[in-house]
Image (cartoon, rainbow, N blue to C red):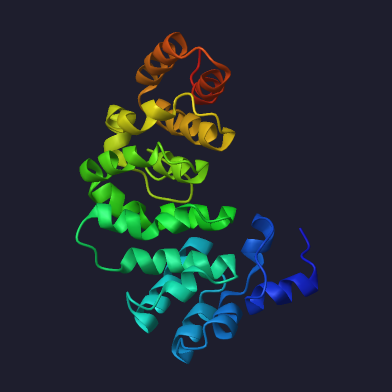
Length: 246
C-alpha cells in the first residue's frame, strides 16, 4: 500500500497518527524519535536507524527502552499522551520497564493506554506488559477479572487479549496452553459481551486454546451455548471452534 508523502511526513514528525496498519508500519522510527523526542541522545537515534530493517516489535521495545533511559519512571507522561500513536506505543514499552511493587500496580499504570482511542496503542500496551503477566499469572488474572466489568469495551478486551494462550506477535503462555481453565475467571464474565470487539478477543482466546486442548474448548462452548443462548455467545463460540475438526 502506497502511503501519501505528505501523510508520511506528518507521521515521521509526530504531528499525525496512523490511520491503518500500513501507515503504522511505514513510520521511520529514527526520524520520529529525533523530531518528537529530541531529548533522546544521538546514540539512541543511531541505534534505531541501525534497526530499520528489523521487526516492528523489536524496534518498539528499543524505542521504549530509550524513553525510559532518557526520562525515567516519572517523566513518561508527555510520551503517553503524545499526538503520535507510535510515540504512545513507545510509552507502553517504557512503562513496562518501570519498577512496580506488584502486577496489580503495573496493570493500573498502563490502564489509560489500554483504553487509548487508537487501535495500535491498544495492541502495543498488552504486548508490552505480557511478559509480566506471564510471570505473575496467578495474581494478574484476579485483577483482570475486575476489568471485565469496565464500561469501556477497550478495557474489557484488554482483560482477555493480554492473556491469550498464543496471541499474535508475542510469546506463548505455556501455562494457559496446557491448562486454559486458569483463564476462565476472565472469560466467563465476557461470554455474552455485547461488543464485537470483545467477542472477537474471547473467541480468539478460545481458538488459541483449542490448538492444544480442543475438547476443553468444545465443552466450554457447549456449556456457554446452553447457559447463555444469545447471538453474542453464538458468535464467540463460532469463532472459538473454527479450528476444531469435526
